[in-house]
Image (cartoon, rainbow, N blue to C red):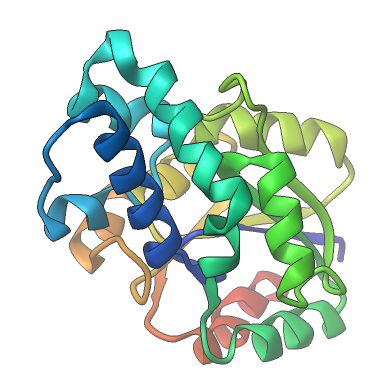
Length: 214
C-alpha cells in the first residue's frame, strides 16, 4: 500500500517558540508597539504570519512587520528551533515501514527546508512544502491541495499537526487527520476540529500513524 504522511513543522517536528517569539518581539520593538502576553505569543505558533500580525500591528503595517520578523529569523531565528525529543526516531520508524514522508507548513518553504536539513530530518523527508514569501499557499488547506497534486498515486494520505488548521486542512483534502497534543494546540482544539487520533508524545507517533496500513 502506498501511504503518504504529511507533517506540520512548528509544534509537531520542532518546538519553535524561542525563535518565533523573539522575532515577533523584534518586529514589534522596531515598530514601537507594546509586547503581547506570553499566552498570546504561544497562540501565534501555527497560524500564518499574515493572519497573526494584523491583530498586533494593524493591516497597514502587517507587511512591514513580516519583513522585520524575517530580518531576524533569517539571521538567527531559524536556528532557535528545537526538535522534539524522540522525533527523529519516530520519523525513522515511520519511514522504515514504507511510508513516504513530507512536511507541509505555513512557514515559508525556503526557511522550512533549511530547518529540516539543519536538524537532521531531511534524510526521512521526501519533500518540504511551505508558503511562498508573498504568502501564497499560507493556508493549510490550499497548501495540502497543492502538495497532493504534486504527489498523486497514494492509496492513503495522513496529515499530522498540532493546530486546528492542520486538522481542517486534512479533512478538506480527504486525508486522515492526526493531532499532536505535545505542541501548541490543546486536545480540545484538535478534537473539536475533527482529529481522528491525538498523540501525546513524539514516541507514540509510529504506533498511531502506522494504523494507516490497517
